[in-house]
Length: 184
Image (cartoon, rainbow, N blue to C red; front, side, top):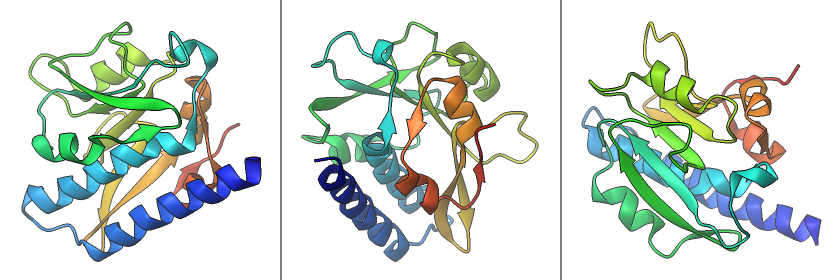
């Protein structure tokens, strides 16, 4: 059964990767953030959260967008009807995030109310998969950090930070990252 699940995960993510490679990131935010939205909707397939991350086996995967929302309704359309295992995906938009915000996945975009660093600090160690954009001179980045390389949206993974948050990331996803900071 595990190998079938692993195969399904591989096929699903391979389809996302293929679509991503066909859609170059343009200087306009819309195509770039459409690709990032597609990634956000699929990252959870490749993550095992700690048992304490959800109230019940039926609890949804809450995908939070903190700060300015670069996705608009694109993210809503992409996740509509999608599931991660037996869990529905629910989007929650927040001006700022706190440890008890209920996020399983957090895209930290930063705002006047809360910087990206403050958002990451707020959920550190709490079983949240954090995702950020690559920002020059940033002090911190998420467990997953989006980067644009050769006009394509790609990502780096900090597996050491994932371990600190009690999260295990599938080797399939790790193998697709540009760079992986390994667990110690």
